[in-house]
Length: 130
Image (cartoon, rainbow, N blue to C red):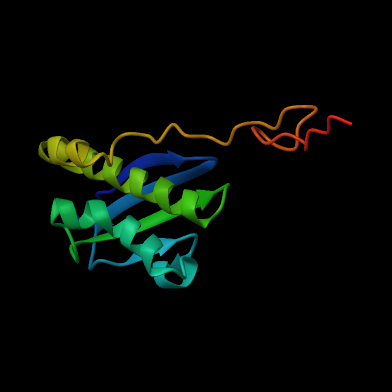
């Protein structure tokens, strides 16, 4: 029973998280560090815990995540997406509840590319008539 493990991949912005869930006592490890160390802001830790609390498996499973790319906010979103997908692999009855909250939907928003002749993606250089 202890060797049963559920894996999933989560993505957000340019971050990719490989998440595995195994029976345990509720530890969350991100890139070989405790979640409190890796994500210093409470809001990011809250984002990660949302699908766990919704599924009602708080303190019953150990979660291990390997995440790369992007910044902390994107990584937290990727870990949340991966955890939600892993929970569905574990118990498909929870799919409807997780989907309703939007945890299974991959956030499609990406950074828009900078265009030539402009200062950024949308911002222009100041126009001078004379």
